[in-house]
Amino acid sequence: MHPATPPTAGAPARQAHRTPVTRRGFLRRFLATAVTVPLLLGGAVACGSDDEAGSDGKVELSIFWWGGDARAQLTEQALELYTKKNPNVTFKKTWQANQGYFDKLATLTAGGSPPDIFQIDDNFLTEYAARNTTLDLNEYKDNGKLDVSKFPESLWQYGVVDGKLAGLAAGENTQGLVYNKSLLTKNGLPEPTTGQSWEEHIAWAEEVSKKAKVPGTMDASAVDKAFWVWLRQQGKDLYKGNDLGFTVEDVTKWFELWKGARDRGATPTPDVIHEGNATDITKQLVVTGKAATSWVWVNQMPELKKNTNDDLGVVAYPGDPSAQWARAAMYWSVFRGSKHKDVAVDVLNFLVNDQEVVKLLGTDRGLPSNLDLRRVVSDDVTDPAMKLSIEVETKLAETFGPAPQVPIKGHSKVRAELTKAAEEAQYGRLTPAQAAEQFYAACKSAIA
Image 1: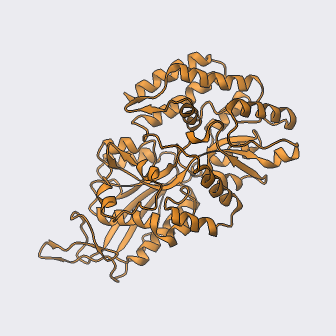
Image 2: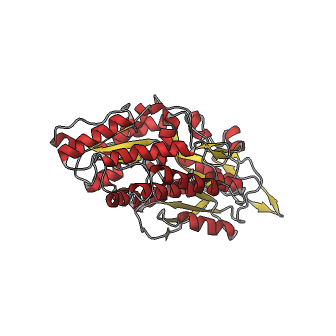
Image 3: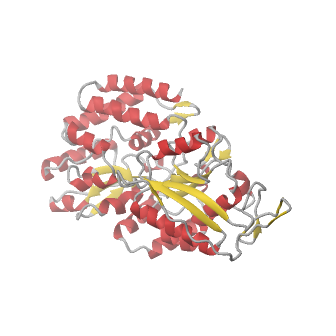
């Protein structure tokens, strides 16, 4: 996945300013004769004894995330709020666009200087947990210093890898089919609805293509989140334990479904499909006018709306909506070797449970994980696109099924190989069966 709100492509890596330190005392540690006094976090004794502060009790945490300018600004404001409430803690803030983010994180980790706190998604969580890079947050969850009592249970559990809580859901998200309402209204066409079958969706898209003269739907054969939902509707899954949860025959049926859609003119031409596969959220076909629908994440609606004057709508992916789940849009993780584990975990708790900061962050990283605060945010939202995102996901939550396991090591490669194989079929260079064989073999190699 891919982040819930992919950042602006090409945005430069930046290191933000450091917030000035004051001497007021929410977080203070005194060192005397080499004896460390336990750090006090918001009036409670921290649970570990590894934290190290300077002789003046000051702590600087490094934090690294991906995102565009808007996310950077919101995150910096949130961290400034933490420092305002805990003056002895400041942050070394670094962020960059999604492109190259995980290469940079891998370099920092391999070089022995990973950030204390870092953003991660379900493409890489298992991999980093398996390397013992991520701190197990279970202890903090169990003693209440990391409060997940207001989270949907399946949401915080989607951060568990091999029994360890490797990441805290920064927000909740689910798959969404975004469509151009203005185009449909102008041409007297019906809007898609949650619960339509895949065949009904393709038939609807074919009708849109004929009447509106715009391809009805982006070809989703390369969209891993669409393939995953479709598999769950067939009683399968993307992964099963440490292996694949599907067969070559399943992939063949998926590619054949979309070949049929292309043959009927329900989708764009291969070159335009490739453009949709390769572009960032700001240039999805639904906003560039090259297709009536795009397959995205529900919380990306506001970002999409910024790039078109048309009205947009969003429904669940076709088929049984219970195949969708409360997915962690992304996670916050703490470096296992951090010298400031307790403080870092307190920051995580603050980012998801403090009402002021949750209202500030809104839905940038998905719907707030804390259900009580999600209602507060929903009541305060004025942006129509953001309000619709919240309404749709809240409604879909009534039908969500259980979350699948967190993707296994090699998931990012699996996603890339799906795009590669799907495009071979889209361009007609391989039959659906041949493309499926290629994809399956590549997946087996990726997870080995």
